[in-house]
Length: 279
Image (cartoon, rainbow, N blue to C red; front, side, top):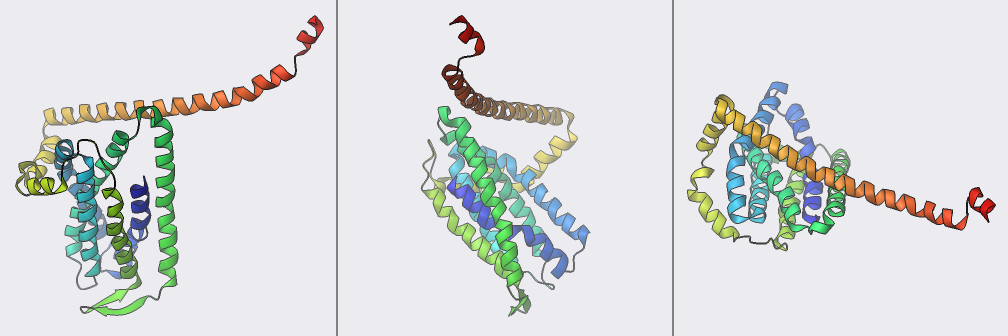
């Protein structure tokens, strides 16, 4: 919970302003920004099956740490060297970051559900979502204030203007890298070493991006795979809906018990008129 909250806070110091920078400072139109966003989504679709295989084999924590590290490093390098005359690498950046984002989002919730005690599922999920959402929402507010308080121009870097956007982006991503250390303190049951997973990733057949593209194409263009994908999606939605319903019922039940208790005490302290007449 602490890691996800801190990650969401520091990441959103700069991430919401990527699009602002692209449209204001780079010679890209809304169509270019749409292409970047599409590449991010495509990267997630390509890499998601591989992250699923890795998380089943090595655990959620190693995959989460790997995705967070790759996300931070790739974005840090990309935004550091971007400028009006040098922005073509952003297309690769959005694709890679989209791929790591998919693995990050896949494992963060799975790890949380795996670690919490069964009896404390409802209160823990409620507190987890409330605190992490609050911290994530505070990130853009603080990032916007810092961005507007800085001077627009900080000089040049490798022939490209160094702007206040670069400063905010780099500070945000450096803190993202530092926040990964919080995750190292967590011990996931049956997790396998991170080094072993990285070693397997180098030769892993399922981690081949070309095979990921083939898998996406099969899902889109093959009726059987599309039907199977729809069934798996419906099964996942039903399972998640059941978990949310269980949490809601437990919260509502707890609230009703809390409301009923004062009334029962009041009824005992102040007998109704019928009871008085009988006496």
